[in-house]
Image 1 (cartoon, rainbow, N blue to C red):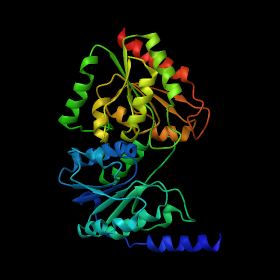
Image 2 (tube, rainbow, N blue to C red):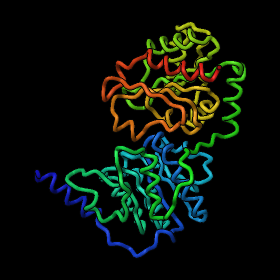
Image 3 (cartoon, rainbow, N blue to C red):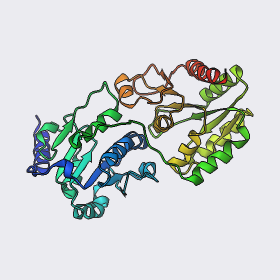
Length: 358
């Protein structure tokens, strides 16, 4: 092992060393969850908060979220407190971490599946009595099993969904999940906005097409969108297609949709918060989307989904749609959607449409 790597490994082991504290996890009253990453990850984690709260209603649940995913927890009755952190800016988070330290958490549950230095430093600052995490892949010359900071690990396998891996962090509490469904709670105002938007299309079969997500390369380009829209309408002229896009891309998307000049295709209203989009998705009959957080939001409402996914079976097993009605089109490449079969997307979508209308 190179000297630089040896030094890094030594320092990580030193920082992540901690004497075990004699404490029964089932006596916990104050539990902290670290989930400061992406929107989809937070959606998939929502059953964890619900299932522990249902068994231990007295436990105070605090979640460290990111600025990107904190809105997923808005109105969630199973979460008592939300703290925002920035994954790549530990220094700016230091004041909030020191405040969390004063709360003397009994247990912290951290979901990273590899050795992450900034997560280890956060845990050391917060200083909970016990730490539960996912079994970690080795990194920086360090195996997760070498870090005494962590008291319990859940098993991790690429053959099961992350939902099940993260729910398994509740095993030390003897929590046996009664449901694995995701939780999203759009406010009444958000639900009303969605209802008013689709009111005039109430007799139509409503198809939402999400164009892109946060990860580069996971998108439906406009030439493909045009093919999909025309392919759906050709099969059934009772469809109304609503294009879902991010607030930043709304103006560009509006222009492209107007250029398509198809009266059965419109752009959604501006969805400034993730629960704005969730409220609209809940009122649609079918979702077509690349592999993004929209897959998991649609799954939360058990909507029929056609997903476009890169040809990476390990990733798919971990993040697959959990809706009872879903079909997936895989691209020929492992790290991009480029070259996926547009006609197969149309075929799968029309199967859902025809089944619903017959």
